[in-house]
Image 1 (tube, rainbow, N blue to C red):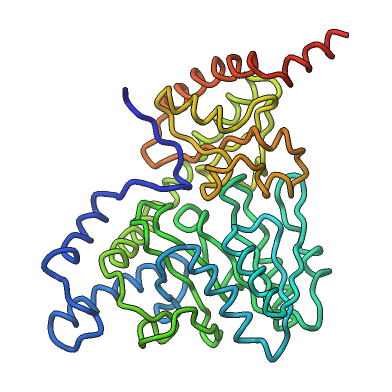
Image 2: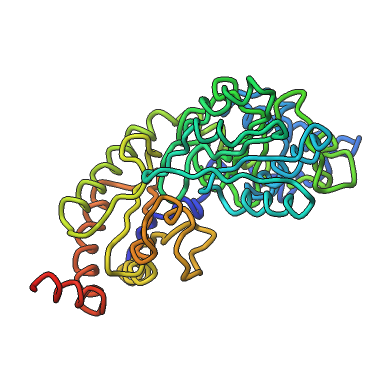
Length: 393
């Protein structure tokens, strides 16, 4: 059976060029970039080239990039590091209700240290209202963290507007751009943010390689104490092969960004139109217009998302239900609940995230497989049976 992989949010295959760039640093170029001899300096040069490449992807300077092991680590370093560094100025931060758990849980950890946290709601499409953020600010607020795009519903947030109103109050702004980096144009100066998280896995780079942009002059206390690596902001011997792969993937993403986006958006729209036009009681989640180009997500009424996922998997189609980090949980998504969906409907979540190689034929194959699966699962659903009874009376 030929497999069709549509779970880009969770992981992507390494591009051949990325793997080729990494291999020397897993074999002959094994030196430590902190060493002063030739072997170390050769590796250091490759690490700094990767830093330049990642910086160019988001319009930053190379010395504003801190390499981390994951997007979650980058988010923790931003939220905890920025808040703790500004503790003498204030102990209040603002986050949105649909943030990744690495942001929400970092904020909860700060609460245990005496910080106040305000969680801003979203509307039915997953948008954070800048006015709601402004209303949540207090004289003690030192940090606002709102993601650039949500990996579960695809909505692209008005981060630049939020950052502008925070800048007027000298409040730092962090954005989690893991779902967006490499897929939509990003310029940190245009966004006006002080910190931005990204990871290589969603744009064909290696897992375990990520980065945090920290604007010049922005202080963040390190989470890992030790040596002088990453300008003293993240101790530990560098994952050189991963960093090199991240840099190569970032360079390719920058070159292919516009071409990828146009192609993926056309396929995404065909999938959305096909699902909504063919199947009853299916809801598009997130914004239709301000949406990641590779992303389509739905809630199927009367059916659990896990059942849909496993049924599609048996047909050779890999997708996600809810966020990648909660796919093993039967709980309803906190993102969908925050958007106002009821618990039963939120459990029918399904997320398609397209790859660079996804074809029009692949989309038609999904649509052909989807209908019979929905029908079969609904026939076994007590809630659907009850719905039909009520409809007849």
